[in-house]
Length: 475
Ligand SMILES: CC(=O)N[C@H]1[C@@H](OP(=O)(O)OP(=O)(O)OC[C@H]2O[C@@H](n3ccc(=O)[nH]c3=O)[C@H](O)[C@@H]2O)O[C@H](CO)[C@@H](O)[C@@H]1O[C@H](C)C(=O)N[C@@H](C)C(=O)N[C@H](CCC(=O)O)C(=O)O
Ligand SMILES: Nc1ncnc2c1ncn2[C@@H]1O[C@H](COP(=O)(O)OP(=O)(O)OP(=O)(O)O)[C@@H](O)[C@H]1O
Ligand SMILES: N[C@H](CCC[C@H](N)C(=O)O)C(=O)O
Ligand SMILES: [Mg+2]
Image 1: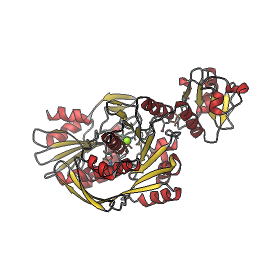
Image 2: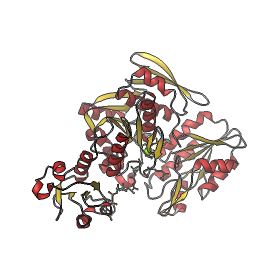
Image 3: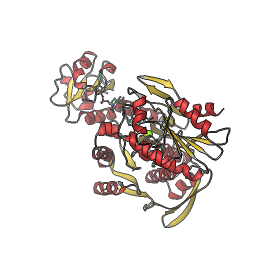
Image 4: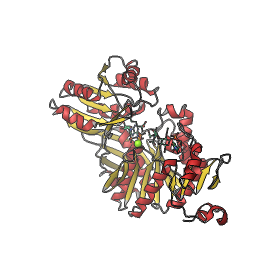
């Protein structure tokens, strides 16, 4: 593609050169690259403009006041957004049906469930999120929930080349506020729930909520749809904004109109949902436990319906959903007979959801093992300690990705609000202690790491998988 075609600039000036790629890191610039110079939390990309031009950048997307010499200056007040638009023109085409999910918890579960529902309906489909890029026969990890905009658009274009027609992605608040997932048409967006997380980055709950709302206010197509879970304290706010924007609104939940959850009855290995839709009552048996999984199933069904699925077909397919990795995944049953569950709960609200999901299955004691991530929202630590101590019978506080912080101090912050909790440094020892403690009637919950394959200590990632360690401790 010629630069002039891309940016509409005069060919004699800068337009008649070939664009070979896009980069937001000057170290990735090659001859022909369009460089995005963004101000970040650690660096100012504007400081690297000259380096980028020397490395062969043919255009620089930057704020109007930034000096750019030797390459075209695409000036924009919000350069991240302008850059995403240009990159999308370069990388297109994309899968024809793209949907996004936001919310504090449940994004990964939802995109994975939508992908499965589409596949059951015969669509070649994919999801992009915390688990990586997932298709029916492949999974590639990207490291972040929402990859950077170049990786994101390149991945989407790659999926299209592989024949994928339907793709669902997680829109994290960081990704939304940094315009990491812009540029391509989004047919539908879903809201799962809103609670405390990431205040280290957004600072206030208001700013965190507004970051998420950009998905509905700006990212989803003007003629697109919104699927809203109705039973969250913030649901009505989201619905009001969706209505103001004139999107096609689908509501799901106890107060839902598209899919109304009338009843939920649990069994040992699953649950039956009674759902009213189109004036009819249906019983949908799903092979997943926990109210939160029921919420995710309904929201995912909403997205499948919003993208053309027939209600009957979608609800019938929901009965065949496979569990999502690390979300209430049963890792092992100990020799004493206690099931050990692994869950990705890493916020106070998610911890409540995970514990409440298991509680009906506990005859003896619920033993909860968890920690909190370093270099992340410190304020959530006592809140997590408080709910764990209040809702579990035995609490073991341990480590979860200490990153650059002292793990003992993180544990102390949790323990300060968790009366009666035991402290076990080192996650393997904590899991071993829980497994040793659990009797036949007890259930062990290992929370916080879910599918993760490493423990981040300093800048090292040490191999660690809760499921594997639980099995080793139980052997
Ligand atoms: C706080 C945060 O979100 N940081 C992300 C963000 O960084 P930033 O824009 O602040 O970048 P910066 O490092 O200050 O640099 C500014 C600019 O200068 C450029 N640069 C920098 C150095 C250099 O030598 N040359 C250069 O060109 C950078 O590429 C960047 O464009 O953009 C970078 C590139 O996309 C990300 O790698 C980085 O993720 C860091 C590693 C991270 O840990 N992010 C986490 C918190 C995150 O994003 N999590 C969310 C939420 C998960 C959830 O749902 O819970 C996620 O979506 O994964
Ligand atoms: N609908 C829900 N309501 C409340 N809690 C939930 C819900 N869905 C998931 N959870 C809890 O949140 C944890 C993480 O779920 P999931 O990975 O789907 O969320 P996420 O939004 O993708 O998280 P992340 O922000 O890390 O990407 C689960 O293990 C569970 O404990
Ligand atoms: N997407 C989340 C994941 C947290 C997972 C938990 N294990 C931790 O490290 O805090 C984050 O980056 O904040
Ligand atoms: Mg996720």
